[in-house]
Length: 172
Image (cartoon, helix red, strand yellow):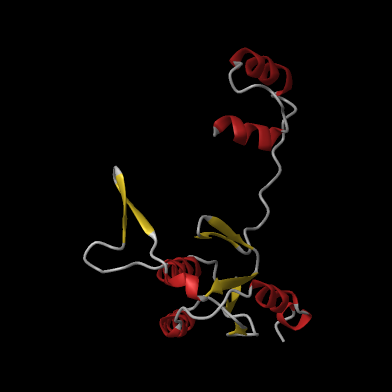
């Protein structure tokens, strides 16, 4: 990780396993290296959605609610995989999506805003105006997610078309 960070910061393409090359570089360039100040972190968070970092000031979450979301999600339990949550019954794909979305929104930068779009046979926009990650908005999101039930077919195309509509991007 240190090697990757040095490459990014300095733009130097030296092998990770050649400390002599790095030492020579440092001796030669240390007085000329000036790091650029970090840009302000507007819209950057430590939040992620299924491992994808959330960056930006306006985010659209697109959640599948089709019948396939009834399927159980395997859980890693040490040396083996099992299905469901111990003591809590089945954990479905939709349950996992709900949990990931709530975790992502609760970790978002306060200046970031989000939209929720769900899709099955038809796509549905839950909020055309972007929502901030406030406690009140998170309560409303939790209630909305609790109402979602897996049903119908998978129509991702309509959901993506909605996300790309100018009104959605402009918060209208």
